[in-house]
Image (cartoon, rainbow, N blue to C red; front, side):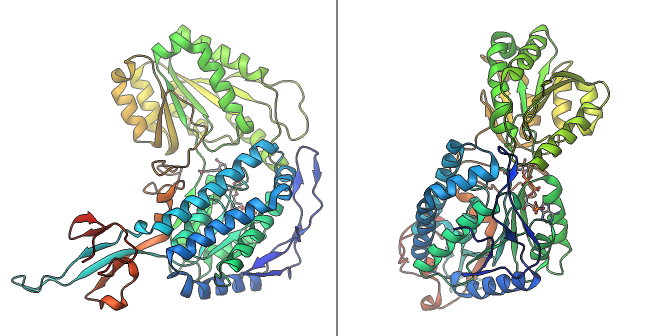
Length: 527
Ligand code: NAP
């Protein structure tokens, strides 16, 4: 049941004066539940509890954490129709999408449960002592990864489950041993509260310390700002806009004790369509990309927002077909009137730039909160000179850049900001002739795709979801897949520490039978 209250640890509380509602964009009405924003005292209490909980949670066994994570997944599934209905009413997204995203969220939690249940993820590394070494004896040194402390998580509006309350950041942080405080997204506060209730029930059933999780309501920047500045908070996970992520990154850096902020932000995901491919199958590609640009009303961080090609009749034909195809797709609902507003404003700003042609703009009237899909076209030289054209327009919009040749194509790519994905569309062996173009693209992105569409992020260990700034604030890490746990830990060494006082992962007997690096060799042997 949705109450509109905050979860301060396992207690519900609503002491504040500021209230707000969520919005149903399909019906164009406010939803009925009223949410109360967290007060300064409630923020302080959530961080105090998280800090207390960390004292025990940081060294809870992997087996117990696995029970907790699996219990969260079970409790989310048990929310059943109430969760799906609330999700749909707060986003305008269809039931199928809600169920798919729930499946992904539950899958992520179970994958982390498996990871920590097995235990080798801590990268235990042991260099045994050499007392006889000359000229100096060598100490026994043992290293493993330890959790950072309480983590604050900000989710994005377009993934109310998979990148929000119990999404990838929360799952990874809890798996690492870090208590989590979620700054709830105001657009899906009801979905967030339901998921928070599932986490609290799971924590209770599996004996986790109170404060291991809190969920704070907020509809503006104040609660988030206070959380990022709070001395008891030790790291931040953010998914959202470049503006928001950058503001929080700067705030984290200005603290007396700066803390890491892992912000996953916007991207325009360049797609390079090479000449043979566009000549051989331009029409089919136009259809594929019209669908990919409008998928989920263009509200995916991996939407192809930039299509790059070399001037030719085939490229002109591709642009015409893409424009025809995209306008034939029925407009669809966006998440919220604010997102529609931002889409129209950012699109208008792009269109107002000089030397740009509007290939197609859905001209007839659409229902309230529905987006008009748009394609624009520029020359390579215009794009290189005008950084405004490089900015993300979040929604069903894409720009086609017609380059004079391979050199200009490489220059265009080199001028881009960091991106989540880059795609190469090629036929036969032509990619081999564009090594410099592909190399430039690799230097700008976190994931490179061959003959596919970037929309869609598989959750698996080899996935990199991140990239050079501003795709993310730290390109050394991924936000998706098991390796995302590395954002919430730090390496820690024991020197000559008595065996009985070492954590299980580092004991001579290797009681967890995990894989370790012992004197330079991977093994699960005892010492
Ligand atoms: P957003 O406006 O940046 O909001 C995300 C969250 O951050 C909200 O809870 C928001 O709170 C908070 N926030 C934003 N600015 C803040 C500030 N200055 N101080 C404190 N809190 C702040 O993003 P969104 O509209 O929800 O999501 C769409 C964006 O997310 C798109 O740009 C999309 O590309 C990106 N995205 C990226 C990924 C990825 O993995 N890289 C995935 C999904 C989405 P308030 O709303 O209360 O201000």
